[in-house]
Length: 147
Image (cartoon, rainbow, N blue to C red; front, side, top):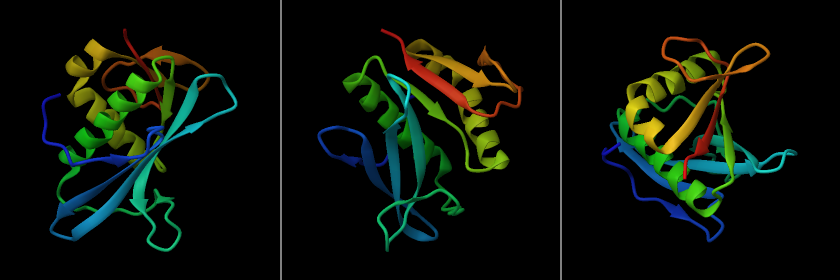
């Protein structure tokens, strides 16, 4: 995926990344966070605007800053960095709403040939996981780096 990306800032552990989206609505600080779960090597990917008051992710905001492809490419860049540092990590992602999950699916679909070279990708159905296929409404996604 050779797309333009925003410059990332992160601490040494590479669990939280910050970048600034620049578009018609101005500069919007974004956060990507990889949070460990109760399962060994399973992390939840959180993404959204940075709340200026709390410093936390606000995944309910709809920014529409006209740079969604660049934002997606930047989030994917964090996934590469995180899984490089933690090669056994399995990352779970889902949208904060059905429409956001659909946007993630469309992004994966658009770049599937690139993504499948480096990652195993699974989609969450009602009660099972399936190897990712285009045009299926998934509830969430699991991603594991190939080595």
